Image (tube, rainbow, N blue to C red; front, top):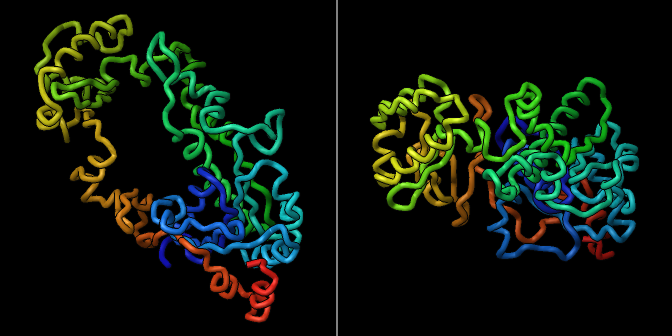
Amino acid sequence: MAGPLTGLKVIEMVGLGPAPFCAMLLADMGAEVIRVQRHGQALGERARFDVLGRGRRAVALDLRQSEGVETLLQLVEGADALIEGFRPGVMERLGLGPEQCLQRNPKLVFGRMTGWGQSGPLAQAAGHDINYIALAGALHAIGRPGEKPVVPHNYIGDFGGGGMLLGFGVLCALLEAQRSGKGQVVDAAMTDGTALLSAMMYGFRAGGRLSDERGANLLDGGAHFYDTYACADGRFIALGAIEPQFYAELLQRCGIDDPQFQQQMDPRQWPQLKAKLTALFLQRSRAQWCELLEGSDACFAPVLDWAEAAQHPHNRERGTYLELDGVLQPAPAPRFSRTPAATPTQAAGEPQSEAVLRDWGLSDERIADLQQAGVI
Protein backbone atom coordinates (compact mmCIF):
# COMPACT_ATOMS: atom_id res chain seq x y z
CA MET A 1 0.00 0.00 0.00
CA ALA A 2 1.03 3.61 -0.53
CA GLY A 3 -0.47 7.03 0.05
CA PRO A 4 -1.19 9.32 3.01
CA LEU A 5 -4.08 7.17 4.30
CA THR A 6 -2.08 3.95 4.55
CA GLY A 7 -3.12 2.12 7.72
CA LEU A 8 -6.68 3.42 7.69
CA LYS A 9 -9.33 0.67 7.66
CA VAL A 10 -12.74 1.41 6.17
CA ILE A 11 -15.88 -0.65 5.63
CA GLU A 12 -17.97 0.33 2.61
CA MET A 13 -21.57 -0.84 2.35
CA VAL A 14 -21.86 -1.24 -1.41
CA GLY A 15 -24.31 1.19 -2.98
CA LEU A 16 -24.54 3.56 -5.92
CA GLY A 17 -22.76 6.75 -6.97
CA PRO A 18 -21.53 9.10 -4.25
CA ALA A 19 -20.72 6.61 -1.46
CA PRO A 20 -18.59 4.40 -3.77
CA PHE A 21 -16.92 7.57 -5.07
CA CYS A 22 -16.02 8.52 -1.50
CA ALA A 23 -14.68 5.00 -0.89
CA MET A 24 -12.65 5.22 -4.11
CA LEU A 25 -11.06 8.49 -2.97
CA LEU A 26 -10.06 6.91 0.34
CA ALA A 27 -8.73 3.75 -1.33
CA ASP A 28 -6.80 5.81 -3.89
CA MET A 29 -4.98 7.47 -1.00
CA GLY A 30 -3.96 4.17 0.56
CA ALA A 31 -6.80 3.30 2.93
CA GLU A 32 -7.72 -0.37 3.13
CA VAL A 33 -11.36 -0.34 2.11
CA ILE A 34 -13.42 -3.52 2.02
CA ARG A 35 -16.71 -3.57 0.17
CA VAL A 36 -19.56 -5.39 1.87
CA GLN A 37 -21.99 -6.57 -0.77
CA ARG A 38 -25.07 -8.74 -0.81
CA HIS A 39 -24.56 -12.47 -0.77
CA GLY A 40 -24.57 -13.75 -4.34
CA GLN A 41 -23.92 -10.31 -5.82
CA ALA A 42 -20.93 -10.10 -8.17
CA LEU A 43 -20.07 -7.95 -11.16
CA GLY A 44 -18.08 -10.60 -12.97
CA GLU A 45 -16.66 -9.29 -16.26
CA ARG A 46 -18.41 -5.94 -15.65
CA ALA A 47 -16.08 -5.31 -12.69
CA ARG A 48 -13.40 -3.85 -14.93
CA PHE A 49 -15.82 -1.11 -15.98
CA ASP A 50 -16.67 -0.27 -12.36
CA VAL A 51 -14.20 2.59 -12.02
CA LEU A 52 -15.79 3.75 -8.75
CA GLY A 53 -15.11 0.31 -7.30
CA ARG A 54 -11.40 0.27 -7.98
CA GLY A 55 -8.70 -0.40 -5.43
CA ARG A 56 -10.55 -2.59 -2.96
CA ARG A 57 -11.61 -6.14 -2.24
CA ALA A 58 -15.14 -7.32 -1.55
CA VAL A 59 -16.76 -9.60 0.98
CA ALA A 60 -20.26 -10.98 0.40
CA LEU A 61 -22.40 -11.38 3.54
CA ASP A 62 -25.97 -12.52 3.95
CA LEU A 63 -27.19 -9.77 6.27
CA ARG A 64 -30.62 -11.37 6.51
CA GLN A 65 -29.04 -13.88 8.85
CA SER A 66 -28.08 -12.90 12.38
CA GLU A 67 -24.67 -14.45 11.85
CA GLY A 68 -24.12 -12.19 8.87
CA VAL A 69 -24.92 -9.15 10.99
CA GLU A 70 -22.67 -10.41 13.78
CA THR A 71 -19.83 -10.96 11.30
CA LEU A 72 -20.10 -7.39 10.07
CA LEU A 73 -20.10 -6.12 13.65
CA GLN A 74 -16.90 -8.10 14.22
CA LEU A 75 -15.37 -6.30 11.24
CA VAL A 76 -16.57 -2.99 12.69
CA GLU A 77 -14.53 -3.71 15.82
CA GLY A 78 -11.34 -3.41 13.76
CA ALA A 79 -12.40 -0.56 11.48
CA ASP A 80 -11.70 3.15 11.67
CA ALA A 81 -14.74 4.13 9.62
CA LEU A 82 -17.85 2.75 7.95
CA ILE A 83 -19.62 4.47 5.06
CA GLU A 84 -23.09 3.74 3.75
CA GLY A 85 -25.47 5.35 1.28
CA PHE A 86 -28.86 3.83 2.04
CA ARG A 87 -32.08 5.62 2.89
CA PRO A 88 -32.35 6.70 6.53
CA GLY A 89 -33.28 3.76 8.73
CA VAL A 90 -32.06 0.93 6.50
CA MET A 91 -28.92 0.23 8.52
CA GLU A 92 -30.93 0.42 11.75
CA ARG A 93 -33.40 -2.17 10.47
CA LEU A 94 -30.50 -4.46 9.66
CA GLY A 95 -29.24 -4.11 13.22
CA LEU A 96 -26.21 -2.21 11.95
CA GLY A 97 -27.07 1.38 12.80
CA PRO A 98 -24.73 3.81 14.53
CA GLU A 99 -25.88 2.77 18.01
CA GLN A 100 -25.00 -0.89 17.42
CA CYS A 101 -21.74 -0.15 15.61
CA LEU A 102 -20.47 2.46 18.08
CA GLN A 103 -21.29 0.12 20.94
CA ARG A 104 -18.87 -2.38 19.40
CA ASN A 105 -16.29 0.27 18.47
CA PRO A 106 -16.61 3.61 20.31
CA LYS A 107 -13.98 5.24 18.04
CA LEU A 108 -15.80 4.35 14.81
CA VAL A 109 -16.67 7.12 12.37
CA PHE A 110 -20.04 6.25 10.83
CA GLY A 111 -20.35 8.08 7.49
CA ARG A 112 -23.84 8.39 6.02
CA MET A 113 -24.53 9.55 2.46
CA THR A 114 -28.04 10.55 1.38
CA GLY A 115 -29.64 13.03 -0.96
CA TRP A 116 -31.89 14.86 1.49
CA GLY A 117 -30.12 14.07 4.79
CA GLN A 118 -30.97 11.94 7.81
CA SER A 119 -33.72 14.36 8.89
CA GLY A 120 -36.23 16.76 7.39
CA PRO A 121 -39.59 16.38 5.59
CA LEU A 122 -37.99 14.80 2.50
CA ALA A 123 -35.61 12.45 4.29
CA GLN A 124 -37.51 9.30 3.28
CA ALA A 125 -38.32 10.37 -0.30
CA ALA A 126 -36.58 8.92 -3.32
CA GLY A 127 -34.48 11.24 -5.45
CA HIS A 128 -31.44 11.65 -7.67
CA ASP A 129 -28.79 14.28 -8.33
CA ILE A 130 -31.09 16.39 -10.50
CA ASN A 131 -33.62 16.66 -7.67
CA TYR A 132 -31.06 17.52 -5.00
CA ILE A 133 -29.38 20.28 -7.00
CA ALA A 134 -32.81 21.62 -7.97
CA LEU A 135 -33.83 21.99 -4.32
CA ALA A 136 -30.49 23.59 -3.42
CA GLY A 137 -30.84 26.33 -6.05
CA ALA A 138 -27.90 25.28 -8.23
CA LEU A 139 -29.88 23.86 -11.16
CA HIS A 140 -31.84 27.08 -11.57
CA ALA A 141 -28.59 28.95 -12.29
CA ILE A 142 -27.37 26.72 -15.16
CA GLY A 143 -28.54 27.52 -18.68
CA ARG A 144 -29.13 30.19 -21.27
CA PRO A 145 -31.38 33.25 -20.99
CA GLY A 146 -35.04 32.44 -21.59
CA GLU A 147 -34.38 28.71 -21.78
CA LYS A 148 -34.96 25.88 -19.32
CA PRO A 149 -32.20 24.87 -16.86
CA VAL A 150 -29.47 22.64 -18.32
CA VAL A 151 -28.78 19.31 -16.62
CA PRO A 152 -25.00 19.22 -15.83
CA HIS A 153 -24.53 15.42 -15.61
CA ASN A 154 -24.38 14.36 -11.96
CA TYR A 155 -21.17 16.16 -11.03
CA ILE A 156 -22.64 18.64 -8.57
CA GLY A 157 -24.92 16.61 -6.31
CA ASP A 158 -23.57 13.07 -6.46
CA PHE A 159 -19.86 13.75 -6.58
CA GLY A 160 -18.96 17.31 -5.57
CA GLY A 161 -21.72 17.93 -3.04
CA GLY A 162 -22.02 14.25 -2.15
CA GLY A 163 -19.05 11.90 -2.28
CA MET A 164 -16.39 14.55 -1.73
CA LEU A 165 -18.36 16.11 1.13
CA LEU A 166 -18.68 12.68 2.76
CA GLY A 167 -14.95 12.06 2.36
CA PHE A 168 -14.16 15.44 3.90
CA GLY A 169 -16.55 14.79 6.77
CA VAL A 170 -15.21 11.30 7.46
CA LEU A 171 -11.60 12.53 7.56
CA CYS A 172 -12.56 15.45 9.83
CA ALA A 173 -14.24 13.04 12.24
CA LEU A 174 -11.25 10.67 12.11
CA LEU A 175 -8.89 13.50 13.05
CA GLU A 176 -11.15 14.46 15.96
CA ALA A 177 -11.38 10.83 17.09
CA GLN A 178 -7.59 10.72 17.38
CA ARG A 179 -7.82 13.47 20.02
CA SER A 180 -11.00 12.46 21.83
CA GLY A 181 -11.01 8.68 21.42
CA LYS A 182 -14.67 8.94 20.40
CA GLY A 183 -16.35 8.27 17.10
CA GLN A 184 -19.45 9.94 15.73
CA VAL A 185 -21.96 9.98 12.88
CA VAL A 186 -21.27 12.05 9.76
CA ASP A 187 -24.56 13.07 8.09
CA ALA A 188 -23.61 14.10 4.54
CA ALA A 189 -26.51 15.21 2.33
CA MET A 190 -26.24 16.14 -1.32
CA THR A 191 -28.62 19.06 -0.86
CA ASP A 192 -26.39 20.42 1.92
CA GLY A 193 -23.26 19.84 -0.14
CA THR A 194 -24.70 21.50 -3.23
CA ALA A 195 -25.71 24.51 -1.15
CA LEU A 196 -22.18 24.65 0.26
CA LEU A 197 -20.68 24.59 -3.24
CA SER A 198 -22.80 27.67 -3.95
CA ALA A 199 -21.25 29.73 -1.13
CA MET A 200 -19.52 32.22 -3.42
CA MET A 201 -22.67 32.64 -5.53
CA TYR A 202 -24.71 33.54 -2.44
CA GLY A 203 -22.10 36.14 -1.57
CA PHE A 204 -22.25 37.58 -5.08
CA ARG A 205 -26.05 37.63 -4.97
CA ALA A 206 -26.16 39.40 -1.62
CA GLY A 207 -23.75 42.00 -2.93
CA GLY A 208 -25.84 42.68 -6.04
CA ARG A 209 -23.33 40.98 -8.36
CA LEU A 210 -25.47 38.00 -9.35
CA SER A 211 -28.76 38.04 -11.18
CA ASP A 212 -31.36 35.29 -10.85
CA GLU A 213 -31.62 35.30 -14.65
CA ARG A 214 -29.81 32.38 -16.24
CA GLY A 215 -26.98 33.19 -18.64
CA ALA A 216 -26.77 36.85 -17.67
CA ASN A 217 -23.89 36.77 -15.23
CA LEU A 218 -20.12 36.90 -15.18
CA LEU A 219 -19.54 33.17 -14.72
CA ASP A 220 -22.57 31.54 -16.34
CA GLY A 221 -21.91 32.34 -20.00
CA GLY A 222 -23.48 35.78 -19.90
CA ALA A 223 -20.19 37.61 -20.46
CA HIS A 224 -18.59 37.49 -23.90
CA PHE A 225 -15.17 36.79 -22.39
CA TYR A 226 -16.39 33.82 -20.31
CA ASP A 227 -18.16 31.43 -22.66
CA THR A 228 -17.73 28.75 -25.30
CA TYR A 229 -17.60 29.39 -29.03
CA ALA A 230 -17.95 27.24 -32.13
CA CYS A 231 -15.08 27.09 -34.62
CA ALA A 232 -15.02 26.60 -38.37
CA ASP A 233 -14.70 22.81 -38.04
CA GLY A 234 -17.67 22.45 -35.69
CA ARG A 235 -15.48 22.03 -32.61
CA PHE A 236 -15.51 24.40 -29.66
CA ILE A 237 -13.18 26.54 -27.57
CA ALA A 238 -13.60 28.01 -24.08
CA LEU A 239 -12.65 31.51 -22.93
CA GLY A 240 -12.21 32.73 -19.35
CA ALA A 241 -10.41 36.07 -19.75
CA ILE A 242 -11.85 37.90 -16.75
CA GLU A 243 -8.93 39.96 -15.42
CA PRO A 244 -8.09 43.08 -17.46
CA GLN A 245 -4.56 41.96 -18.31
CA PHE A 246 -5.77 38.57 -19.55
CA TYR A 247 -8.60 40.17 -21.49
CA ALA A 248 -6.12 42.56 -23.08
CA GLU A 249 -3.95 39.65 -24.19
CA LEU A 250 -6.95 37.92 -25.71
CA LEU A 251 -7.79 41.01 -27.74
CA GLN A 252 -4.19 41.50 -28.79
CA ARG A 253 -3.65 37.92 -29.91
CA CYS A 254 -6.94 37.85 -31.79
CA GLY A 255 -6.15 41.15 -33.51
CA ILE A 256 -9.25 42.84 -32.08
CA ASP A 257 -9.07 46.65 -32.13
CA ASP A 258 -12.81 47.38 -32.09
CA PRO A 259 -13.24 50.11 -29.40
CA GLN A 260 -16.49 48.56 -28.18
CA PHE A 261 -14.44 45.70 -26.70
CA GLN A 262 -12.90 48.19 -24.25
CA GLN A 263 -16.22 48.19 -22.38
CA GLN A 264 -15.48 44.75 -20.98
CA MET A 265 -17.48 44.90 -17.77
CA ASP A 266 -20.58 46.65 -19.11
CA PRO A 267 -23.27 43.93 -19.25
CA ARG A 268 -25.26 46.05 -21.71
CA GLN A 269 -22.50 45.48 -24.27
CA TRP A 270 -22.15 41.73 -23.74
CA PRO A 271 -24.76 40.53 -26.28
CA GLN A 272 -23.25 42.56 -29.12
CA LEU A 273 -19.68 41.67 -28.18
CA LYS A 274 -20.62 38.00 -27.96
CA ALA A 275 -22.10 38.15 -31.44
CA LYS A 276 -18.85 39.65 -32.74
CA LEU A 277 -16.74 36.94 -31.07
CA THR A 278 -19.08 34.28 -32.42
CA ALA A 279 -18.41 35.49 -35.95
CA LEU A 280 -14.68 35.76 -35.28
CA PHE A 281 -14.18 32.24 -33.94
CA LEU A 282 -16.11 30.75 -36.85
CA GLN A 283 -13.33 31.96 -39.17
CA ARG A 284 -10.75 29.35 -38.07
CA SER A 285 -10.63 25.74 -36.94
CA ARG A 286 -10.16 24.79 -33.32
CA ALA A 287 -6.61 23.66 -34.03
CA GLN A 288 -5.79 27.05 -35.54
CA TRP A 289 -7.17 28.86 -32.48
CA CYS A 290 -5.17 26.53 -30.24
CA GLU A 291 -2.01 27.41 -32.14
CA LEU A 292 -2.71 31.09 -31.60
CA LEU A 293 -4.00 31.10 -28.02
CA GLU A 294 -3.21 27.91 -26.09
CA GLY A 295 -0.59 28.28 -23.38
CA SER A 296 -0.94 32.06 -23.29
CA ASP A 297 -2.45 34.28 -20.60
CA ALA A 298 -5.57 34.72 -22.73
CA CYS A 299 -7.28 32.10 -20.50
CA PHE A 300 -8.09 29.82 -23.39
CA ALA A 301 -8.65 26.09 -23.76
CA PRO A 302 -10.08 23.80 -26.40
CA VAL A 303 -13.28 22.00 -25.43
CA LEU A 304 -12.14 18.38 -25.53
CA ASP A 305 -14.23 15.23 -25.53
CA TRP A 306 -13.54 12.30 -23.20
CA ALA A 307 -10.94 10.64 -25.42
CA GLU A 308 -9.25 13.90 -26.45
CA ALA A 309 -8.82 14.98 -22.83
CA ALA A 310 -6.74 11.91 -22.03
CA GLN A 311 -4.50 12.52 -25.03
CA HIS A 312 -3.81 16.21 -24.47
CA PRO A 313 -0.07 16.80 -23.90
CA HIS A 314 -0.60 18.56 -20.57
CA ASN A 315 -2.72 15.75 -19.17
CA ARG A 316 -0.36 13.11 -20.56
CA GLU A 317 2.70 14.69 -18.95
CA ARG A 318 0.96 14.96 -15.58
CA GLY A 319 -0.50 11.47 -15.78
CA THR A 320 -4.00 12.82 -15.23
CA TYR A 321 -5.49 9.68 -16.73
CA LEU A 322 -4.52 6.03 -16.60
CA GLU A 323 -5.72 2.77 -18.09
CA LEU A 324 -6.59 -0.31 -16.04
CA ASP A 325 -7.46 -3.52 -17.86
CA GLY A 326 -8.27 -1.55 -20.99
CA VAL A 327 -10.50 0.97 -19.21
CA LEU A 328 -9.51 4.64 -19.45
CA GLN A 329 -10.11 6.50 -16.17
CA PRO A 330 -8.83 9.43 -14.10
CA ALA A 331 -5.78 8.86 -11.93
CA PRO A 332 -5.82 9.46 -8.16
CA ALA A 333 -5.66 13.10 -7.09
CA PRO A 334 -4.38 15.29 -5.51
CA ARG A 335 -0.61 14.67 -5.64
CA PHE A 336 1.52 14.23 -2.53
CA SER A 337 5.26 14.95 -2.45
CA ARG A 338 6.23 12.45 0.25
CA THR A 339 3.44 9.88 0.33
CA PRO A 340 2.24 9.56 -3.27
CA ALA A 341 -0.68 7.31 -4.04
CA ALA A 342 0.07 4.04 -5.78
CA THR A 343 -1.51 3.13 -9.10
CA PRO A 344 -4.92 1.76 -8.14
CA THR A 345 -5.84 -1.85 -8.71
CA GLN A 346 -8.91 -2.88 -10.62
CA ALA A 347 -12.22 -3.39 -8.87
CA ALA A 348 -12.86 -6.82 -7.39
CA GLY A 349 -14.95 -9.16 -9.50
CA GLU A 350 -15.89 -12.15 -7.42
CA PRO A 351 -15.89 -11.42 -3.66
CA GLN A 352 -12.85 -12.60 -1.74
CA SER A 353 -14.78 -13.18 1.46
CA GLU A 354 -12.54 -15.78 3.10
CA ALA A 355 -9.33 -13.87 2.47
CA VAL A 356 -10.81 -10.56 3.62
CA LEU A 357 -12.26 -12.00 6.81
CA ARG A 358 -9.00 -13.78 7.61
CA ASP A 359 -7.01 -10.59 7.07
CA TRP A 360 -9.40 -8.71 9.35
CA GLY A 361 -8.86 -11.13 12.21
CA LEU A 362 -11.52 -13.84 11.94
CA SER A 363 -10.29 -17.35 12.67
CA ASP A 364 -10.34 -20.18 10.15
CA GLU A 365 -12.84 -21.99 12.37
CA ARG A 366 -15.17 -18.99 12.38
CA ILE A 367 -14.88 -18.64 8.60
CA ALA A 368 -15.64 -22.34 8.14
CA ASP A 369 -18.77 -21.99 10.28
CA LEU A 370 -19.93 -19.03 8.21
CA GLN A 371 -19.41 -20.98 5.01
CA GLN A 372 -21.35 -23.92 6.43
CA ALA A 373 -24.23 -21.61 7.39
CA GLY A 374 -24.29 -19.94 3.96
CA VAL A 375 -23.50 -16.53 5.42
CA ILE A 376 -20.53 -16.09 3.06
